[in-house]
Length: 297
Ligand SMILES: [Zn+2]
Image 1 (spheres, protein in one colour):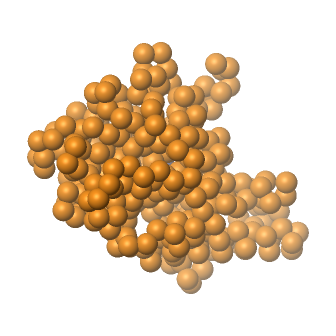
Image 2: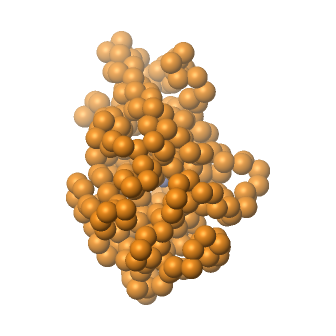
Image 3: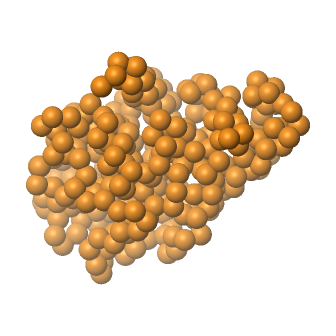
């Protein structure tokens, strides 16, 4: 692998960990905790500066959505033992980032691993999945929609287009009315757009709007990095991202430079508190630059 690519990936991983930290407690790692969301459906938070894990108990075994940073799997398994004695039979990775896939290797190699086809491609580039560890890459992939299990155990995976990356899955548990949105909806901040893994500022809001209008019968959302939210929050987040692009288009038309636009940007009265999570990828200026790059192509 070329040195420059490795460096870029290391930087991206460091940046994402810091970003995850900024969305949670900036000073210390919160303890690993399991929270009941619905019957048979739990959320595991903390344990590292990393993404939220969902745990769904089915007749056949336990399904885990996202495995957090490396070396967190043992703790996740201990927390699962406090709610069920069933073994983990499936992992779903919402997207490629290490703070959502890093502990795949702590689970049995016989576990089914499922992700969007682009996420599998992105994961094959990660140092976490080289050599012996290729066995912890997704074994089952899909393009637009995948239905796993049936009846009360059904899980639906949806791909609606590019947003945080080019492989963001929305994972729906219809019987209990819950969805895990991954980092496409990590929280109410300006989005982090990982262009190295196919993310898109211009598509971001459209992708979220499709998710909001297509996924019905859900009343609770497990976000990538924040507390539980509601479908209305997802809709608002879609609007925020679409309004952002409309605003950027106006700035381009007005002949503003990226620096001028960044100086003018405000979340606006409709979106109080929607600041950049931190100054990563150049903060809001980075997002504006990404949008300029895409819109001026
Ligand atoms: Zn992510």
